[in-house]
Image (cartoon, rainbow, N blue to C red; front, side, top):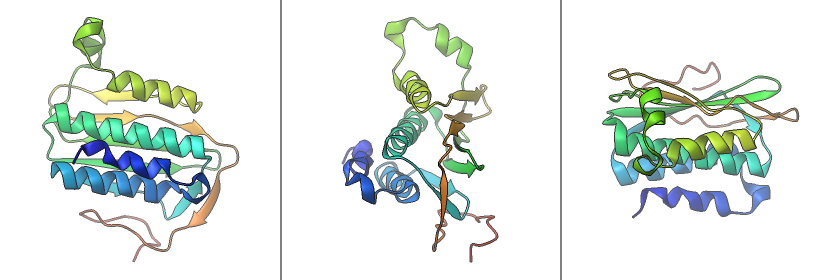
Length: 173
């Protein structure tokens, strides 16, 4: 089964799609297909985002996880969602071998993939930015946002997912 099968969650009825189930579906499918542990960290209040934002964030997360699987030699990864009143930030990270972003950016166009460029373009389409913090031997953190959403609404989440370890949210039982 291909690891990008989580995309099907992004093709459902747009009025019934919410951020946390989309991310959970992508992570679960990824873990099932690769065996790589991925933790999902998030606040209890789920932001209500426009469908296009959900779609772009889903594809960003999927692309970043695929990059971790293909290149990082990581033992684990994580997806972390944080939010303020007018923005959401998604951080995707790993404990892998890391890389030098400057060196990778200098590679000839035909010798590098499209993953990082796709992530950056999708973040820009949402009004955000994509920043990569990486260094050889230090793992990688991809920050594809903050993405401004002036109409972000918070919806309580009744269930907390524990991929492994602990969730630090005060409302999580």
